[in-house]
Amino acid sequence: MSSIANADPAEDRATVATLDTEYQAAVERNDAETMARILHPDMILVVGRGSVFTREDILRSARAQEYVYEQQVEEEGTQTVRLYGDDTAIVTALLWLKGTGPDGSFDRRLWFSDTYVRTPQGWRYAFGQASLSLPPPQ
Image (cartoon, rainbow, N blue to C red):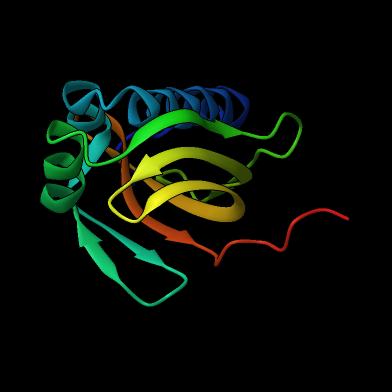
């Protein structure tokens, strides 16, 4: 049984879209407190090169400011939120990342899929998958 019997799909899509945009902005600022509020306790992120990061890995990196972002934003017009039942939503978007990290500077774009689940505390980001960097535009 769904945690919310009469969920409004349009409202849920809007809520998840806003939450994912808020999460990307928090990453850009290394705002671990906001990130922690949005992340599900069992969250994991799988990136294109095969590495897996836990919620704690992600929050530790933000607290240490391992990456300093000039840009960490969804490309305008690319975000789509799809609902699967009443309690699961998947966000896809093209993400622009620019900044510096342990391996030097970077400027890349990649596709991601973020899975949100409805919990008693509201929607939480539970699983993320990011593509390899896209080739530069020609």
